[in-house]
Image 1 (cartoon, rainbow, N blue to C red):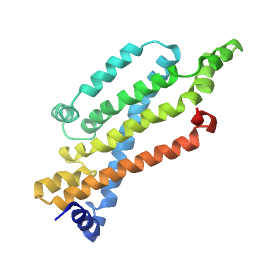
Image 2 (image 1 turned 135 degrees about the horizontal axis):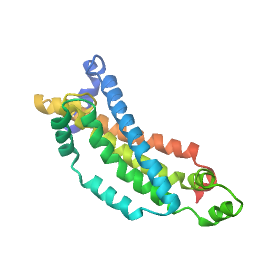
Image 3 (image 1 turned 180 degrees about the horizontal axis):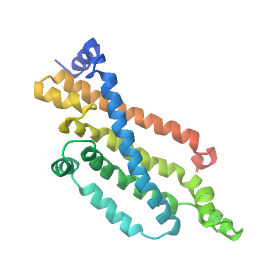
Image 4 (image 1 turned 60 degrees about the vertical axis):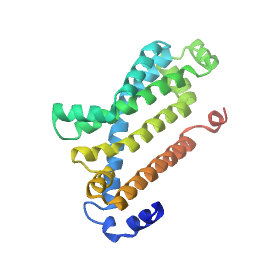
Length: 221
């Protein structure tokens, strides 16, 4: 049975579209994990990246943090958190947030540093406050790159949130983990296909967000 047959068999089975193990329920759980982890990572990384980029200090420290965050094994961190705090959302959110913070943090810093200094200097010369320069001059110009960092973090979370199934939580990882345990490869392939589809949908959402939030002039530059 080839891959396409597995996919067709999975999605054509009405049993996979209803109940607590149905596709709508599992997709909703996966999206929930993704939004929660991305929100926490953004709250941590965006202010730090914006402020360090605005003042031009701390770039080396951020690079070290990013390298350290990327070097941590996600599954190993999940196991460690499970041993420390037991089963629950905390031990899932921690590795997902650690995974998403580095790309958001570094990209935000680089976005702020890449802003043309001419309008920034002009705004300061006119007496604009540092907060005004940050939010009215630098942030709009840096927004495309900032969104790309958020997009990168979101994609990594979507792809990795399947680990929630290892600690008896839900999400699309349930299809993969349960399918491997049951030797039900139709379910494994269906779960992997849903994860890939959700990643593509995430790309589409950020593309639409960039079209709406970024001014045409900034997009052209």
